[in-house]
Image 1 (tube, rainbow, N blue to C red):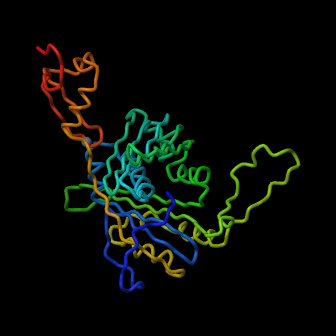
Image 2: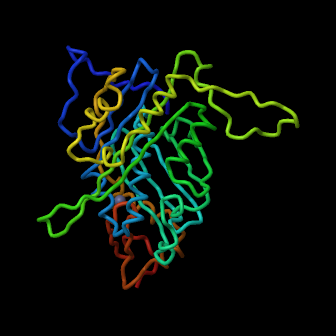
Image 3: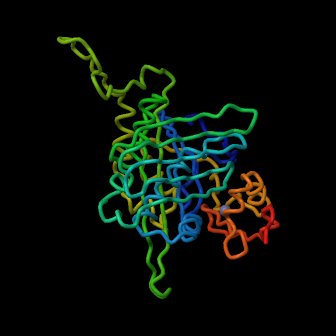
Length: 335
Ligand SMILES: [Zn+2]
């Protein structure tokens, strides 16, 4: 998840002005060599809108799922092979389950489960999730081992969970910013559109001792033990202070290009951008796949699915509806 982007473009001129043309639905890998920083910037417009509008989510749920989608693109876009990155949460808040499925190189799908009656309890994303865990799974096909990373959700949001994950599991100094918003344009009958943006930045110096981070807890050190204090590297301190200046509105601004935003942040140190990786909303469900799934069920379960003389299966990811006759669904003794 931390490797350098392998999509170096070979522009004839390595130094150029940042493009002012906004590119939506793409991830831009970047690096700031002077500070040993590498990162990725995501901007999302129509693709996010398409995924969220397939479901009739209340705004708070749409926003939270949008945040999970942005985080997934920031993490999953580093996959170098054909593979899958799946982000899931399971927790006790009003939004009990989220899943975002990213299939390399560019396919995204997602859905959320929530309890409408409990939504008013939560004031922010952390409270919507509640307590539980966030799991990240990398699946690179049947011949490769699956990787799963787990991090506790403890009332904080997804940014916080990502920081915790990188601190504990990968031990790479990492900062993540995510913003999701709704854009209202007059003249479209009050229709709103979802937009989102995010940035992930990691400190990857050649000398590993420069990447040391302060411990979160002193642990079970004996009494009288003086904890050694770790001073963060100056370059990382500077990187964090730069990324902390990014405003949510800059992350989602449809008129501000991703390149201009990166330039705004890092122009004093020089920032190098790589070829953007496009994203699209595309589900992998199909009638054949649903039919195969039905045939894998026990005969009794299949029979229980017959309602009004047919078997109807709705894809949770994209809301596509597949209808079968009982015979097509493999129900025996169908009448
Ligand atoms: Zn589907």
